[in-house]
Length: 80
Length: 267
Image 1: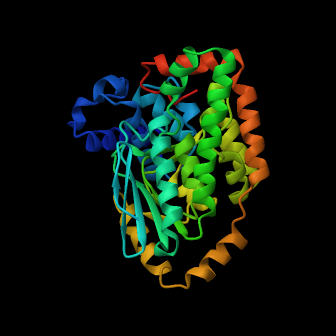
Image 2: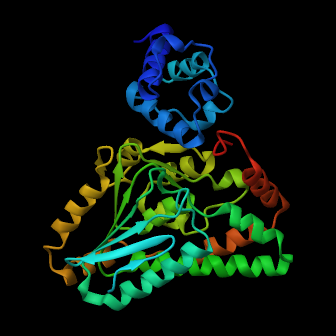
Image 3: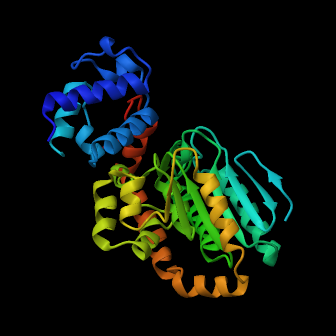
C-alpha cells in the first residue's frame, strides 16, 4: 500500500513527465491549472492517466474545486 | 457511393468498407450543419446497398470522438425565438437526428465506432448506435446532460439500456460522471480496447475480418441480436422536449455557454 507521500511523489513525477516540466519546479501546493497551463481537455487526459497509473477510478465530481497536487493526492489515496 | 468531403464530416468507400471521418472543430459538436451532412451520409449509405459491408466512424481531431450536441448553437437559437417556435425547432432537430441514428443503428451492415478522447453526450450516443465500439485506452465516456437539467436526447438512454445492466446505466446517468475506456470495456460497453492512436487500425482490422462473412447472414444476425428500441426512443424525445421547457435548463445552458472555467464539464 502506498503512503500519501508516495502517492503525491508519483503524481508530481507523472505531471513533470507528461507536461515536460522539470520535476524540481513542481511543489505539492502548486495550482496545477496555472503552473502547467492545463485546459479542460488536458484535465480529462491527466485524469485518465492517473486512473491508469494508480489502478483506481476517480469520479470527476470528486475533483471539483481541486487545483493543487496535495489535495489531488488525498483524493486518489482515498480510492487506493 | 461517391466519396464526399464536407464541412463537418467526410466519407470514403474502399473495398466495401465506408469510413466516415468527423472533423468539425473543436470536438465534433453536433449542430445543424453536422446534422445536414449526416442526413446526406445516411441517404448515400442507404442507396449504396450491398456495395457496403462495413462502416467505420471515427474522428480526425485530437480532442476526441465527439463532445456531443452543439450546446452553444442550441442556446443561442433558443434565445432568438418564441417559446412555441423553440419547442417546434427542438422537436424537429431531435426527430431528424433520431432518424439518422436509427438508420445507422438498423443498417444491414456492420458498423464500428472507433473512438478516442472525449466521447460525451451526443457523441457517446452516436457510438452507441454502432454495432461495435473500439476504444483508444485514453477515451472517456460521459452523459453530462443531467448537469444541465436534461436527459440525453439522441437516443442514449434506450441504447444504453439495451447494452448494459441498469445499475451501470443509473451510475452513468444519475451521477453524470465520466468513465475511462478500461471501465467501459469491463462493463461491456466497449468491444475492443486499442493502444493510444491505434483505434482506427484496430477498427480497420475488425472490418477486414467481418467482411469475409456472408452479408445476408451478418445482417440477419444483427437484426436478431440488436433490435432498435423505437418505442423508447420516441418516448425519450417527448421527455427531452418536456424537460427543455423548464427555466432551469435555459439557466444551465447559459452557465455552460458563458463559462470560462477550466473544468466546465464538472457539475
